[in-house]
Image 1: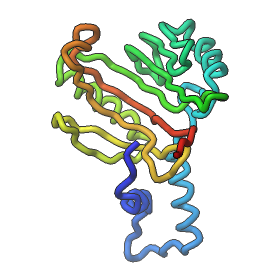
Image 2 (image 1 turned 90 degrees about the vertical axis):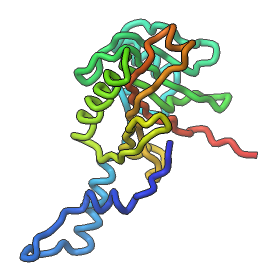
Image 3 (image 1 turned 135 degrees about the vertical axis):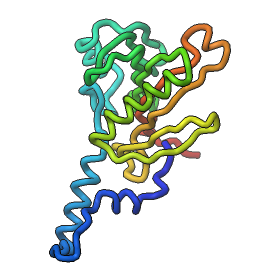
Image 4 (image 1 turned 30 degrees about the vertical axis):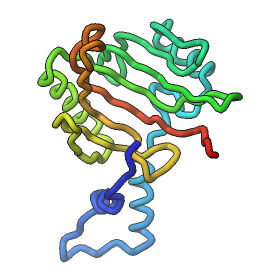
Length: 200
């Protein structure tokens, strides 16, 4: 996930402004206020499953919630996917739960919500609907991708408060994938978060 470039801007955005005649907050109260606001931005779970949960436990929880998964890469244990499921009042065309492994254990390290779209305008409208919904809870930063589409970064990673937790964007599929799906999609993607640290 992209690093937070304007971390202090986030703090300033979360800090209350005071009129000249109001008593300023003392430093302890201000630190507590900022800490509470930042903690409310940390994303620790999705669909009732905590990030870092093992594949087997997550699969059982998710299938109890949504029924059998559409397809699930049981050999690699990297993805559990569902089609046409409702979450937080929104019907998604697909939801993919992502996992990584250290060779011993698996960890849920991401989640992708997809809203299919036949046109760029439809995808932008769906992206904006997701943005509006999540902006009720999270501070977000707006950027523009190489295709000229706006995207939004928000929340804080459960592993590193210097990383954003999620991105809301528009996907333009290449011609081959567009034959299988739709030409565009709006996407809400959490992670991927690195629970497994690999170094040389």
